[in-house]
Length: 300
Image (cartoon, rainbow, N blue to C red; front, side, top):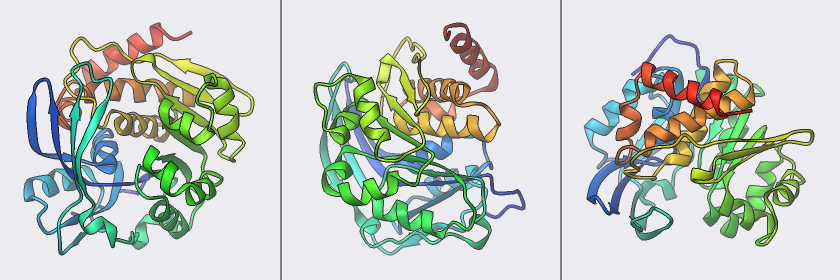
């Protein structure tokens, strides 16, 4: 799919086929990956998806991503299997164990931006290998506002590459456990951890903490935003990716970081109400605005 629309943002990260096991059952062939969640967290045709899939990637999944992305010129399809992951959650969603991981074609993939994509004002580097995130950032001809997410695995196995990348980003967004691992401060409070991470060079930092909300830090400011309360959590897979996708949407619409975090919290609340991406596909404007009003009423 192509479009004449201007490129506001690039969304890059993993695209996967997941198996999710939780108290509600076992769900196979679920479209997942950090880039898929972040893209679908945004309105259609406002972001360009960049990533890789295999020749086993189902047409229904490809069509869904195509409908949401400005173009699929930078969505690469290679011979081989799409990255796949399986996870099983505890009944209270407090933790999960990985059942299997197969990187498939993502192991040999190098991102290649289309020529129209290199001057957009926003770049979201979703959770994937730091060397791939760096490769994509190096291809940008503009100086975009860069949002970065990562995963504890890469903090452990690609620490040097990740820290070199962190120096170059405007907003680094990680969860509480990742912040502990990256700061090396298992017993410190969140402000001490944030200072250690800001010393690595990002302009600003968000630490996500699930149902406890999210926390913003830069050299001058710090504040927190509540999580939107959900009556029934169905699946927490991709919630952090949906959150940063929502933050991106807020920033693209000219909101400040506090209001963008509220958008992220509302977006994540929809995500956890369905299996995989299903909750994001059920977002409607009226309910979104209703939840956003709650966030505004409950944030001082």
